[in-house]
Structures are given as structure tokens and as C-alpha cells.
Length: 110
Image (cartoon, rainbow, N blue to C red):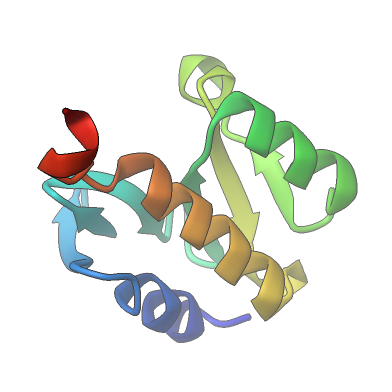
């Protein structure tokens, strides 16, 4: 998995846009960050999963996924080691992160 492949998958999510936060690219939906690149350094991505989703990825794919240290990681922020990650796994993680942060349509809120 390359950084460009990560970016392409992230931007394939409906209404996803690329921005920047703290010196690295981020991917947002509805103004909310669901993933970043180059955090904590080049060769890494980050996806914002739920704690339960994170546990599944970390336990089943430990070479590719690891919790971000500290409170962010306890809340589901998950490092992706791009070189060790498979495209299908990253697509699944990015899809979940996008779903976790996409705005709920008004009709579903009522």
C-alpha cells in the first residue's frame, strides 16, 4: 500500500475532501476528519475507528494496524503501517472510518 493508494481510496468515499491538519494531509466528510496521512511520519496513515473496530483490526492484522498512543488511541484512532497493509484491509478500515464520521441524513435522524 502506498500513500497515493491510501489517498485515492479515502477520496473515493462520497463527499470526502482532502485538507491539511498539523502539517499532514487529512481526509474529511461533513467537516470531520476520518483519516490522515503521514502521521506520525511518512509511511503511516491513521483511521478514526471505534474502539471495537480498532480492536478487530489490531488483533487480526497486527503488522498493519496499531492503536495511536494515548487518549486518541483509546478512542479508536488507529495507525496504518502502509508498507505492511493490504489494499482490501485499508479500504475496509477507511470505509468504516468514513461511516463513523459521515453526517447522518436528516430523514434518518427523525
